[in-house]
Length: 258
Length: 265
Ligand SMILES: Nc1ncnc2c1ncn2[C@@H]1O[C@H](COP(=O)(O)OP(=O)(O)O)[C@@H](O)[C@H]1O
Ligand SMILES: [Mg+2]
Image 1 (tube, each protein chain N blue to C red):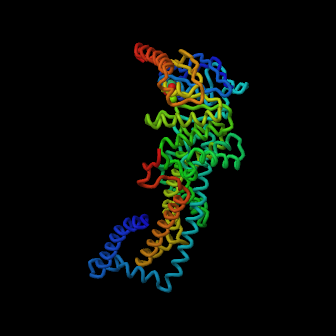
Image 2 (cartoon, chains in turn yellow, green):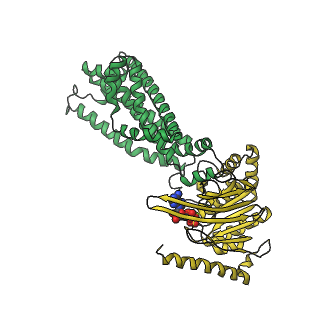
Image 3 (cartoon, rainbow over the protein chains, first blue to last red):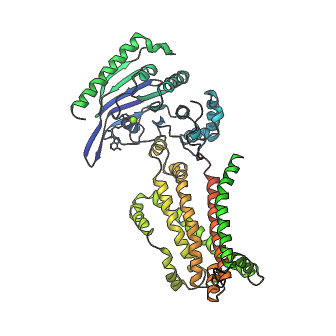
C-alpha cells in the first residue's frame, strides 16, 4: 500500500542546514495499522508532509498503491495534529467538503457524513459549527472525515495529543472499535507508547533528529482488542522495550547539547 | 429576548448623553449665551431644513451625494477585491506591489481631488474616480492581509487531501479573509462619504458638499448645519449596512461569551 524508500529531508535556514529525516524506509500493507513512535521534534510531522506530498523529500521516493507519488498531494486521507475543521462550515459540511475534494459525488458525501455522524452519536451536531464542540468531539469529526475519505491510506498525526488522559483513552477505544469494523491502511504517529501498542499491528520506533529507525516490532495481540490488554505481560514487555529506545535517544540528545 | 434587553442596555446610555448635549446646545442658544446668527439652535436647523424652499433642494443634493458615494464605493471596493485576489494568486507580482500598497496608506489620497478636477473637468468622472481611489486601498490591503493570514495548518490539511490552488482560494482563503475584508469595507464606507462630499466641495454644483459650501458663502448657517447632519446620517447608514451584511455573512463566529462554551466531551 505505502512504501517509503530511503527518504531524507533537510531544511535549510539562516543558521544552516538541518537534517530531519535520514534515509528512512518503511512499508504499510493493505489493511495494516502501523504506528510510528518517536520523541517530539523527531520529524514525524515532517515525514507525513513528505508522504502526503506537501514537501518534496531531499532524497528518496514515496510510493502509494504501487505508483510513485513523491511530491504529489491528494493520495492520502489525513487527520492532522489539530482538528483543522473549517470554522465556517458545519460539522457535516466539513466532512462533505473533504470527501468532495477527494472526488466523491456531493450528494453521496452528504449522506455518508450524516449516516456516520448518526452512527457515532454526533447526529445532533451535524448542523453545528465546530466551535461549539469540545476538543474530543472535534477530533472525532476529524477522524470520521479521514475515515470516510476515499483515499486508501490514512495518516493520523498525534490525533489525541492535545486531549487529557481520560478522554484520550476513551478516544483510543472509540477509534479502535470503528477501525476494526472497517480496516483501512493506517499510519499513525504518536509519542504515546501505550497508544501505539493498544492500536497497531506493527510499531516503528524513531530516533530524535535526524530521524532513523531504531527498532521495529510486530504487536502480537489478536483483534478485536480489549481494554484489559494494557495489563498483559507481553504489553508491559514491549512497552519497556520501546521505552528503553526512547530513553537512550533522549540521553544521547542531551549529551550533544541538543 | 436576552439579546434585545442587551441591545437596549447598550443603546440608552449614549442616546441619553446625546439628548443632553442637544438640550444644552438648544439652551445655550435660547438663553443667548451664543448668538444664534453664529450657531443656530437645533430646533431652527430642523425648521430651516423642512422649509418648503429648502427641503426639495436638500433631498436633490442628498440624492446626488448618495449616487456619487455608491458609485465610488462599489467601484473602489470591487477593484480592491479583484486586485487583492489577483496579487494573492500571483505571488511574484505581489512582492513588487504589496510594499507600495502599504506605503500608499500614508498618502492622503484626497489631495488628488484638485488634480482630478484639472484633468477631467467638473463632471461626475473626476469625483467618482477620487472616491473609488480612496475606497480601493483599504479594501485591497485588508483583503490581502486576510488572504495571507490564512491558518497554516488548515492550508496544509487542505493541500494534503488534494485541493488545488483554486479550491484553496474559494474554500479556504476567501472565507478566512472575510473578517478582514469587512474591516476594510467599513473603513472604505466612511472614507467614501468623506471623499464624496470633499469632491463636491471642489466644484460646487451638486451634492450636499456643494450645497454646504454655497450655504456658508451665502451665510445661511441653518442650511449648512442641516446638510452636515445629512452627511453624517449617510455615513452612519452606510456603515450600519456593512455591519449588518457582515453579521448576515459571518454567522459561524462564536458570539461574545460563547467562545469558551463547549458541550459534551
Ligand atoms: N518548514 C520547516 N523549516 C525548518 N525546519 C523545520 C520545518 N518543519 C519542521 N522543521 C524542523 O524539523 C524538526 C521536526 O519537526 P516535526 O516534524 O514537526 O517533529 P514532530 O512532529 O516529530 O514533533 C523540528 O526540529 C523542526 O524545527
Ligand atoms: Mg508533530
